[in-house]
Length: 194
Image (cartoon, rainbow, N blue to C red; front, top):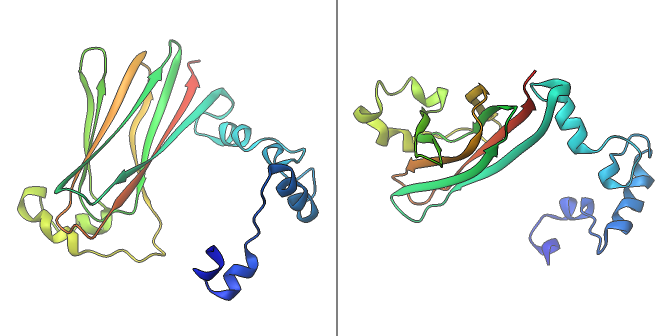
């Protein structure tokens, strides 16, 4: 079915397997077992271990949380949310990645008491210089187009945040052209306090 949706050259490069063992055997035919991650049947470190060791906190990093936040084009204002917990003795670094040319507002609240920890407007640096303020001309951002080759821009939302508790990140976006859906990738690096 998929073969008919893509061009012939691309279809030749796609291989599908009905079970994990068959896929792992295929990969081991292409990649040395000591190079292939253990997640895929090899003897190298797992992808999760590699991510943890190369994160911003190095060896003290214990886990990474990530969530693709999808602002769907169904209403004039789009909203998304994501809940997570910080345990005693942990600290986090929270980053947001997007290629969106439109305005996004993110607010982090503590669930227990509703206290706002941080609120931040994200506007693409390429679009930022075209408007002096959000209220003045935000609708013009809808017409900005970023080339597919452009890399996402990253915003560090929080760094070395250490307060134990349950949190919820709320994202809001005002879209004036309902033909667009936008995304932001949330990445939270969690480490032990030293």
